[in-house]
Each structure stands twice: as C-alpha cells, then as structure tokens.
Length: 534
Figure 1: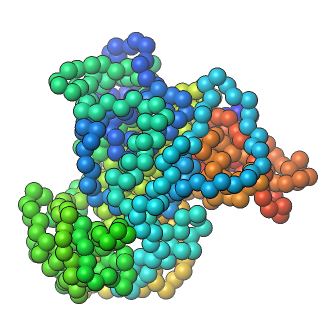
Figure 2 (figure 1 turned 180 degrees about the horizontal axis):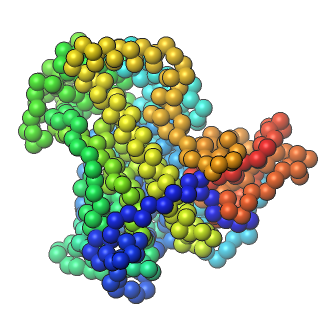
Figure 3 (figure 1 turned 60 degrees about the horizontal axis):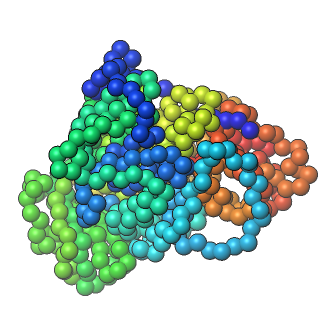
C-alpha cells in the first residue's frame, strides 16, 4: 500500500540559507557536497531535539545530535508540566508510563524491507508518569475551575514534573537507539545544496570539524544559531518583564494545588511536584528589575501573599530566578533541507505550560515525515516535508494567542480589563462547551490539522487511544508505522482501501475491538488520522 499522507499542502519557501544562500533559497549554493556522514543532524539536546533524535535513530537512520552543553549539565528550567497530548506522544514511544503485560491478537505486520524501522518501543524508559504529581483540576482567578478528568485520553491530567525528568528518559531512549551525541560542540556555519547540508562545528578544546548530512534540524532554543544562520527573522517582542520563579516548600497545603490568582497589582501561579516541592511563578507590577538581578525569598512571598492572600508559609527555596517572556514566531519552519522546531521556531508566555509540550509535538510531527522521505516511502517528498510547516505553524500561532491571553488576563490593570477577566473566567466556569474548547487547546488533545476539501470529517483529527483486537492503538504506534483500523467480520470486506497518496510507509492492519464500529481509519505514526471512510 502506498504512500504519502499529509493533511496540509501549504508550501513556505522561507528565506535564504544563511551562509552559502544562492538564487534558490530552498537549496542555497556552494555546498561542499560529499558523502553524508549522517542522515540528519539535530542541533540542540533539549526535549524537542532529544525526542526527534530518538525517533529518527529508532527508525534506523543515522542521527548526530549537536549540543553546546556538557553531558552532565544540570537543567533547572522553567518547564514543569506535561499535558495529556504530549503524554500520548510519549506513550506511542513507550516512555509515558510503565508497561503492562497483556495478551493481544497477533499483528498483521507487512514484510520488512531491508531499511524498515525497528519501531519506537523503548526498552527501559517507561517511568515518566511516576516522577511527579497528576493533577486533574486547574483554578483560574478564583472563579473558573478547569476539570481535566473528563478528557477522552489515557492521561486525563496534567503531570507536574521537572523538565530534566523528561530530558532524562528521552536522552536514554535516544542513546539506546544509537543516536550519536556530540556534547560541548557548537554549530559555527551551515551551507546547503541540492543534496544535503554541510555544517561546520566547533568541538571540545577549540577543534573544528565538518559534518555532512542529508537534513538538519535546529532545536536550539530561543537564541537559535540555526535560525540566525538561515537569516530568518524572529518577529515579536517581550510581553512581560521581571517574572520570578521559585521552587519552594509550603508549611500549609493550598486547597487547589494548581492555581493562578491576581490581585493588588500582582499575580502568582503555583503547582506541586508531588514530593513536597512547589513551583511558584509570580509578577509584581510595581517592580521591573533586570533579569540578572537576584531574587530573594521575601520578594516571592510578597507577590504570592498579594495575589493569593497568603504565602502558605513558603520556605527552603532550592531555586530562585528572574526572567522576561517573549512572544515570537519564525515565519518559515522549513528552509530547504533545514527545519526549525521548538523554541527555535516559537516562544511565548509560560502561562498554560505549553512551551515544552508544543516543541515535543513539533518533533513528533517532523520525525515520521523525515523518516518517510529518507527511506524512500514518500512519492511526493517535497509536499510531505512542506506539510510540517503547514501543520505546525498554525499550532504555534494558536499557542501564542492562548498563552498570551491568559497572561494578559493576569496582568489586567484597569477596572475595564479586570471586568473582562471576571467575565471570561465566569464563562469558562459556567459554559461547558467553552471550557471544553479551552481544555482541548491547553492540553493539546483538541488540536487538529487542516484536511483537504471533501475529506472525511475525522481526517486531520487526533486519534484517541482506540481499543483494538490487537491491543491499544498507541501501543501499536510504537512500531513507528501507519495503523489501518478496519471493522470486524463481514463489514471489513466491504470497507474502502486508503488511496496511495494517504500512506507514506509500512502499514499495520488492526481491527476494532467493538463489533459495532463501522468506520475505517488510517492513523499516521504521530497519532493523527490521515484518512477515514464509513
């Protein structure tokens, strides 16, 4: 069965390829050529780069991961929460929760090609969901409570866990899959041509080297060297300054463990890690200090007390920091053979905890498309690679809007704006369709990709964890293949077959566990529906 699903056909040619850009900005000019040493270079070993590198290596591709930091760098960072959709993405890679043995019907696996994927299944990194606390209720400004328990997901909660825990399991997975890690190494320049990308690297001790690859992905954060070398703008601005972060202990537990409150010119957010520590984030309208100015515990106490009415007896800080928040998005996620993902492509307010989650979902979208093209499974490879920008750029833009909206409600400084905040939060608390839509956006389960005109209504939607005779859908997705789900018995014989243009790789055949199900679904490796009938 053949090939190439993509529910968006947009094409963004982007800007020139930085050093060596030529008349055709998709390919540049002046590339040194030569035999590629790797299929893909991933620049940046944060969560986005680690998930991408792990996917590509698990698919049997040669991956080099370039990271400025030493291998043992501590990563106390702002990211603290993993939303439901991201947990589903990790579940499809065996890194969301511990496996449970279950007898299942034998899979109908196609004959393997010599370059077929060994799949995404992990051998020992299934403990992430046990590293933090699972929270099912979020409180906004005293009035609105968002209930996650009703999500149609295996993970109807927010997992509060430090970013370094996410990096730990993803790093181990990438290492076990065979990714080549190059720590203390920085990208100096890149030049792309019709056949690949040549990157010049500064390694440990000041030595330089050249790396030739088929494709390169910049997952190197806000100050992305890859983005700068491509000459791409990063339009936007700082939307809030002098926010404070702290990891502290509380003497008294809050009634609502996750809450955002605003009052008296300040707002504060808090969430428990589940081990006695709380993440606190706050802002004081009357204090705008530079990022480098130290934060004292008393400053955090004062902000939380003004916003929440109490400081909960906070004490023993293990981390205090000050930062500002930007809202920016690059206009093109693809420039020829170079892609941007995560914070290199978009940054936004930390409100809603969507930053790391959006980057991880960027990686999940891009990895299977690069795999399909590199393994020769895509009859229209350029269209498939273009669909990464077409699908993910609107998602990044929506996250900028939603996170920015929460932040601006928190910063409300006039009676009219505070009245608007009260109205919005009241609507969220009273109108179920409105709260459901907000929860879908926040958690990622409501994200869908644009489908072609006339396509089945399910096309482009995220597939939930369907119950199949062969097992759970997301367990099957660990093979890194498409999954074709058919009805049982006689109904299966009458079902349509997906068109060749909907498939870009090998297909696992599965059957609905429930006999009344009559729809046929083709699910992409990233868990989105590529085609449907019935």
